[in-house]
Amino acid sequence: MVRSDDDTWDLASSVGATATMVAAGRAVVSQDPDGLINDPFAAPLVRAVGIEALTMMADGKFDIEKVLPESAARVRANIDEMAVRTKFFDDYFMDATGRGVGQAVILASGLDSRAYRLPWPDGTVVYEIDQPDVIEFKTRTLADLGAEPTCERRTVSIDLRDDWPAVLRAAGFDPSAPTAWCAEGLLIYLPPEAQDKLFDDIHHLSAPGSTVATEFVPALKDFDPEKARQATETLTRMGVDIDMPSLIYHGERHSASDYLETKGWQMDSAARATLFTRYGLPAPGHDDDDPLGEIIYISGTLR
Ligand code: SAM
Image 1 (cartoon, rainbow, N blue to C red):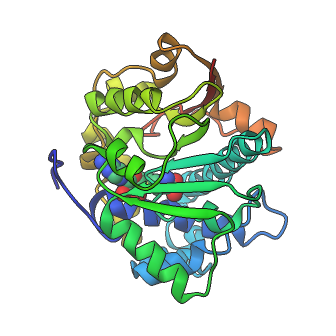
Image 2 (spheres, rainbow, N blue to C red):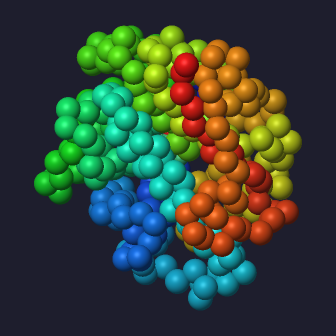
């Protein structure tokens, strides 16, 4: 599968399937009553997409230790990472809106159910942006489940490489009020120039006091698709037809944190191990075969 400037997908194909994959991870970590997060919508959403291996995983019926013992440690580490990552962005939104930021924008919302599960302060407006099939599927599936948003949820169906700010404004977004922005699991799927444009647009739409959170992968510049393909073979052996290396844009790109700092944002960074420790999980060891390597979680405020 080769990426193109105007490629599209649903939740079972191309980049869309990665949203189903991470939701399956959230479903697994939500099975632990003492776990870091609880996303009760993850499993039913994954089930509704219908990728068999991910449904089995979400339903706790895929015993990785038994089926693929040699890959179990990596799969477990990826699933732990979903717990940590979800908690990071949950806390980020609750902190920003708790301090009075009244609108939030979830860029590349995928099967993220925050608009339905977080205790947003009264009156918070949450915009979700993703490709049309993705937005339509989640909205319909959650409605069929009887789920109700816990905020005022507004959807924006558009590709983030197109003129999404115009459509966001048309949906009622107020650029004169502070916003909490989040781009979770997105940047690696954007070409470098689209990443810069995304942050240019965010900056132009942000009133002082706005906040942003995302994560970036410093090793993308040295990313080797063939080496990564060997490492991600686990997915194929699990029966999941996602060729991650062909979906990722690699090569040189700006560090999201540095780029935003040059525009006047005050940024904080936390490496993966720092977040694991912060949330009481053992930090994962270094893995030479990890195709992406380090992940840096960043958040910041426009002064
Ligand atoms: N943020 C969600 C989460 O963490 O559960 C989804 C992450 S998923 C790995 C990647 C998401 O990025 C998908 O939902 C996909 O549709 C979205 N995405 C990637 N490139 C996009 C683009 N150019 N326009 C709109 N959405 C995009």
